[in-house]
Amino acid sequence: MATDKSTTEYNTDSTHNSNNHHEITKNMSHEEHSAAKAAARFGYGPLAHVPAGDREAAFGGEFQPGTFKSVAERKFANPAPLGLSAFALTTFILSLVNVGTRGITGPNIVVAAAFGYGGLIQLLAGMWEMAVGNTFGATALSSYGGFWISFGIILTPGGFGIVEGLGGEDSAAFLDSFGIFLMGWFIFTFLMLMATLRSTVAFFFLFFTLDMAFLLLGCGYLARDATGAPNPPAIKAGGVFGLLAAFLAWYNALAGVLDSSNSFFLIPVAHFPWSEKGRAAAGKDMKGTV
Image (cartoon, rainbow, N blue to C red; front, side, top):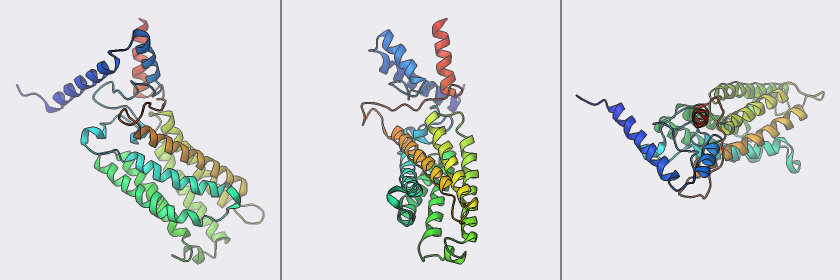
């Protein structure tokens, strides 16, 4: 009788995963093994990235909010850390401007990073996410790459004439238009946020803080102060959430870069207790107490 190919792959992967688990734990004492299992529930320790079945659990370092096949099995590098790093740096620079760091008020310095790193490089990372079969990663990274390119187009001094065509950067028409632009990205980011609810804490809070940044910045441009300028408290609050999003993006990127070949440790990503990995870990603990 012919053997189903998917069944064969599943059995092979399960055997491989079991062997990986055995290799890691064979020299551990009972106490060390128990501690490693407990740490794995929070995405930390030597068992954190050992899959329970033929698929990996949700992991921000791979920009995957659900179960997935690792890119290592496809002989491709993981494009997620590159895209996350491009997003993080550009967001970091703009957010520092928004909070008024060292008296800088104009976003001109962001334009170069928006085109070259946050835009082009992140867009390319999104295209590679398509190549490795990650729909979420391709959608998110490509879209935010497009955001930074469009942001650069809007604010290029004298380049595209968008600001001037709306009456200048202080005009109500431009401020309203830019606020609407940001609110559109708030809606898109909220949709992406919904896809992270069963992943990890680090992954979820990346999109939560980014969503809050878009909301506050959009409100800052639409609900202006008495002088007609963007609302300073809202813009600064948006900048603070932007900074948090930038550091969380770097954190998730680092989680995707670190492995046993280049680091002595892995960083925790904290799986939600209702996620697949969280429930699997809770089930193992329940069995261990019976």
